[in-house]
Amino acid sequence: MILLTALLATIVIEYGVLLLLGEHRRRVLWASVAINTMTNVPLNLYVQLVSSSLTTIIFGELLVIIIEAACYYLLTHRVSQASVYSLLCNTISFLIGLLVYLIILI
Image 1 (cartoon, rainbow, N blue to C red):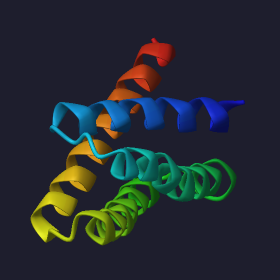
Image 2: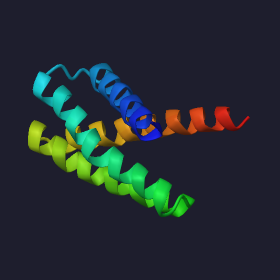
Image 3: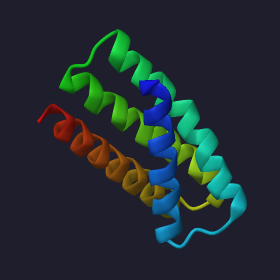
């Protein structure tokens, strides 16, 4: 259940960030759902089952940013746009997730 919740939250947040960045092409927006499914589930499984160290999480997030930037590049054909999409989407969803996690701990 936690994996599904994390995935759905990530999809909603990152879809919203893309909209706020002015992205309205349906193929890019729907691809973001597939891209997040490809990256979010494996990373969360790894963190939950193998290692939840800060180093692992940071390395995993950096790897996700690179993979997602490559995917966005295939859709946008612009390195800068793909990089911004990936970096902002992942940073914002990570920070919101971290905030929720910290609130739950309190």
